[in-house]
Length: 371
Image (cartoon, rainbow, N blue to C red):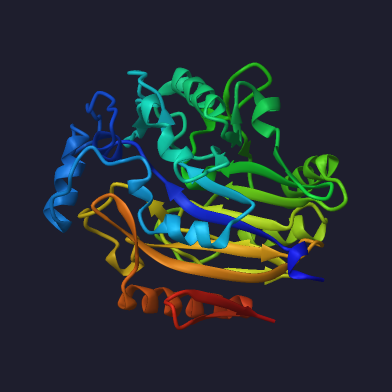
């Protein structure tokens, strides 16, 4: 197998460009919020400035990605996939049963194209924050920008449809996205044959895994690289449940998927390579407006990773490079040496169960070891 046969992807955790970030970008939604303590989205801008210093506004669309862009240009991934946890809408109809709501003005959609994002996983607990009208506006905004959204749609058939990206010769990347109720997705958000919503799993049982594997397998062709992006599990917990691990293994054993791209935890979790296939149980946060928000410091939610896995033609993992990041003044920066060391130690500790470890190279990037 030659290097030319390998495919590199960019994966990351939560990209949350609503609320405070929306107020720092060129276009703004009404800043009104319905949270218990914060009623104005601009307060998150002020909190970030109080924590890390004032910054010029509006931020440029590429500017928020900061130093991550150089890493992406260097790696030249075939696809850039993010968990996009924001409704792109000016809808005023917030979901009253939820306490936190994210929305970004449609005029700010170039914040995604500026980073070359090709696919957004939408099966999460924020995409319907501003009602079904907000979801439909999100789908239209992404489509107009040439970005494929997966895991949510105008009906269940659309929510379940994979995003397809051609590779040469005659190969494809397929991306599916699903959400689990354990991540806080309201059951009412589940898409049906005649209602918009997300592709929401009823549970993580063997039966559900088998049905999902059958559905994915019906779309798969020889040579395809198949990614399942899944929003699952509670916030602020390093532990990977047996149900989560069994679910991932079942999908790989069936031959349905090559990569599991997990998110929801708000912090980096352990990495497994099972039968040669990559399982990212939790990719943490990548871009958000959390600067200065206290609590859960031991999980270091301020640190993230650029995940750059490369795959052989048979879908097995060839290498995984991880670039430590943080967010300062609403811009992605390379993490400092202390932050990079903390991420290495965390991947070491959490990967012990899975037989994986990480080492820091001479340029401040992490490399995964397994097997």
